[in-house]
Amino acid sequence: MPAHSPALPGAAPPRDCPLCPRLAAFREEWRAREPGWHNAPVETFLPRAGADEVELLVVGLAPGVRGANRTGRPFTGDYAGDLLYATLKRFGFATGEFEARLDDSLQLVGAAITNAVRCVPPENKPTGPEINTCRRFLTPTLEALPRLRALVTLGRIAHDSTLRALGVRLKDAPFSHGGRHDIGGLQLVSSYHCSRYNTNTGVLTPAMFEDVFRAVREHLG
Image (cartoon, rainbow, N blue to C red; front, side, top):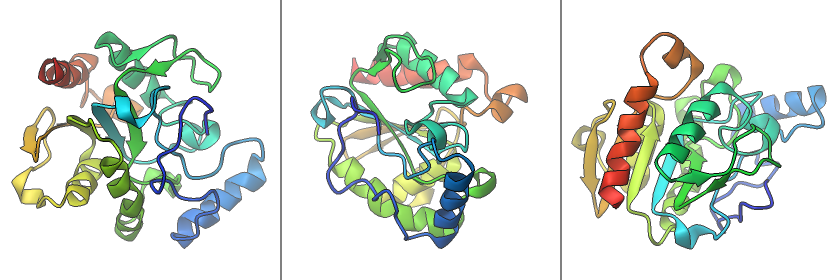
């Protein structure tokens, strides 16, 4: 894990987490293929000052094989990070230069980034039981951020798992791009995932993505 991203106690799985056998086997497969990669659960990316600074939490789906599974930092190493971190910088949630590697100068400002599922899944598709199992780490992540005021969920799976972690019924806060819901003092804004597939097909444009974070910035002031 990046040295500048202090851990959240109780909110991160161990390096050899055995809870999801399919994901553990896939992790071992990639360790054999690429022993120099991270190939382990990916912890929450925090600002240098730690959890007490965080007002915004971005929740993604899961690490990509050649992205966070390789580098150990959420959304680092694949296309989705290019759009995410550029947008975070635009609205003051990050500084420095994102170069898709751990020793770049990128720093988060008042924001943190995590995934609903911490280990890379085959074909980027975690199963329902895997999503449910990994929520034992998402729930304490939310609880460990004392100044949290806003959430951005990237994609329906991340959105629904976050709602369940908050104890909210899915029908009470349905997923839609740009949808906003006030939940127990938090504003949750949902977005289509910033994947290459979604941007290449026009499901998500940079302007649409910026609108989500503009709403959050306006909410936080």
